[in-house]
Image 1 (tube, helix red, strand yellow):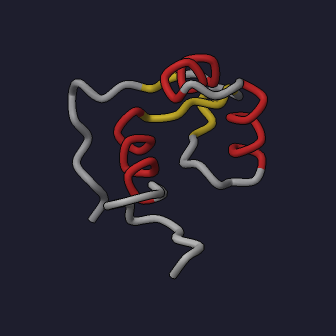
Image 2 (cartoon, rainbow, N blue to C red; image 1 turned 90 degrees about the vertical axis):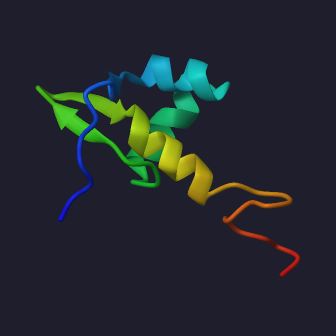
Amino acid sequence: MPNPIHLDDEFLDIAGVAAWLHITQRHVRRLVAENRIPNHKIGGLVRLRRSEIDAWVAANGRGPGGNGHDPAA
């Protein structure tokens, strides 16, 4: 069963995600093109759900306490 959708959850465009994560729009587009970040096509436009990006960041974290890749392990 899919995760329940929260009413306060919102879709962001590439510019919004880039500003929120402090990365370039080009990098967000690359992540989308490589299917490395959760995204949706709505009316031909790429949109990213805030809750899915939160979960993606948490799952791909680095450093102490991060659940993502650890090159030292």
